[in-house]
Length: 482
Image 1 (cartoon, helix red, strand yellow):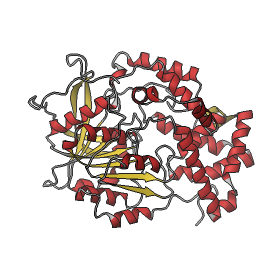
Image 2 (cartoon, rainbow, N blue to C red):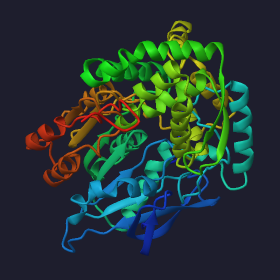
Image 3 (tube, rainbow, N blue to C red):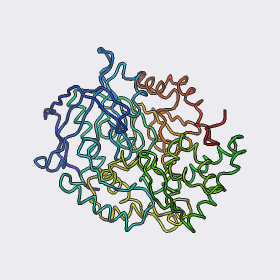
Image 4 (cartoon, helix red, strand yellow):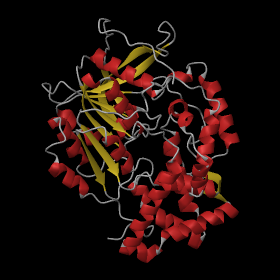
């Protein structure tokens, strides 16, 4: 692990941050939110404070009540590579209750959004099972494109939490509440480790425990989640009656595509223009994995798989592929993703031949792992705190949220993180996938937890969340059964 320079002493005056009225617009152009925005300059490399500066983009949505609470909510996005402002504009209604009395603060993490984003044109999904040669060439091109405005090694979580606390100080908040989703849970936990005195409460949604390296078990977790989705179909009368066992259909389709890919021309779901592609086993793995992240898209899987295998109609499956990959390509800063996972995860994999063989038996296989290893063989590795992957121990109130069918951060990961958090509560939502804040009653649970500053007294909200039902399986192209 690379060492970081000492933090500035408390005697060093914190720089100010001036915010002015602005609007935050989601990339879809469908959502716009009023806010106060500004930029905050930090050293790209804290070890060279006289060197290049990068501007962090900061937005605040002020509390409706002008006499509200002094401790705001800071939102930390997932990915790695998603901007906090993009994340918030996609889920803003969830936080309406909470921001009646508290400011909401968004800091686009260094390398994302408007904070010197490490975007690479035409880069593929960094976790897709592509060939090492392809992803290596894409990584080289990406590094070349970014060299003019970034030293990519300086975009790790260990540096990002320092940025976050500098923004907190500049805005004058003594303590803050944190919400982290997916990779954002890693940021939140490391912030809590570094700055416990400034942390009031923490919400972790789709939990990555500090001890864990992301990606090493992705294929196994995705396989397990897919099996749970198929089991839900089998025990659902309408789904089982229409599709019997979708696992059998999926396995037959996978073997078919491994033997002979299918060339297709389908309408692009966003432009309507003809789109040529070769639908092979890797494409099937990608669409199934990404669709498993959302219960709405998972509800389509038995239908589109049956349509392809039983009726030789691959258009719905290919259309879903274009939809889920388009969303990813337009939201994730691939360069920042690589800077995080190469320094913090892949460097510590240490996967045995037996473990690699186990991955190879999943529907994704070991190709995703090989692709990540190929990228990280040439991607510069930045500073990571020596205790970064140590278990976190804290008495601060922590609420942990998990979906039972999460393909990337299953409930067992939250349980592992909770072992060092005696003042915590884990909530598992049956049948749900990745990210729980949009399920019914979740907004009430989050706001109540932060209002109380405790995991005690949440029984009614937890019970309501536990009654949530996943999206009903779609059994025909006219929709779900009544």
